[in-house]
Image 1: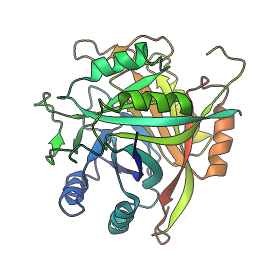
Image 2: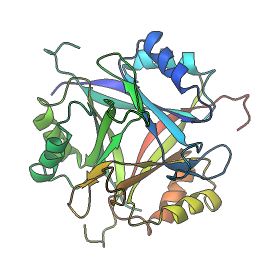
Image 3: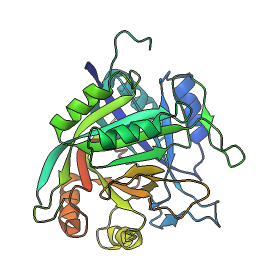
Image 4: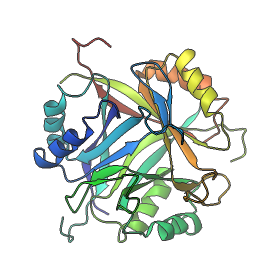
Length: 107
Length: 107
Length: 107
């Protein structure tokens, strides 16, 4: 199987920061990222130091959100530079990975 | 603490592709993977280029799904070869990691 | 952009084990971890070998939970040593990553 090197990225937001939509739009329209997945955590704590937990009676909690995407390293480096002013320090993580690449499939 | 090397894998599907159940069954029955976790994203975009977002009034959206699993590198390599024809190009990511290994515990 | 090395950790639990709250409290109060995110999987299988799947008619299922956190490698090593007796073998995974570090921002 042919695998090509990529950089994985996870960006940590919270629901109340709420610039998720503009960030997704930007990654899609400007940065031409092929794919992004957004996950909502059910609990956690971050800058505030307070624990946040989802419950079925309180859906308005400020829960953690994580954006995940990957692409070739050079493209990701540019995107991280572009995002650097809009993402808080210690909230954007990257690491090296490999992705399957089927040559005879149209990407 | 003793840690052993593993390969982490994340596979990106969508709810409408819906071969999740057969893939889980296969990983369990044929490939004898010890554990798999499936996550549902709340938003994202992929091949179609359209943003998909969950809302409480529309639970039938085509949301992203991610399968995550890990095992020793040689076993994962075989599994990735087996899955290669069933997973779209650029939708199966792997990287190296380490897992805790408590020797005197029954696995 | 300045990035500093970190160790990422993912710990795999299940809802029925239910020591999530005490683990979060411990990571926050004792280990002074800056941030933790908890995700709930919608399906999966683990030690029991049985598939667990969420449905809207059965919210009491024993679904997988994942705790994710990262910090500088030396701090994470200490935390993993401390947690080693409380987390099952093969349920705590770590890997190297890098996080954005904006120097003129108060952490």
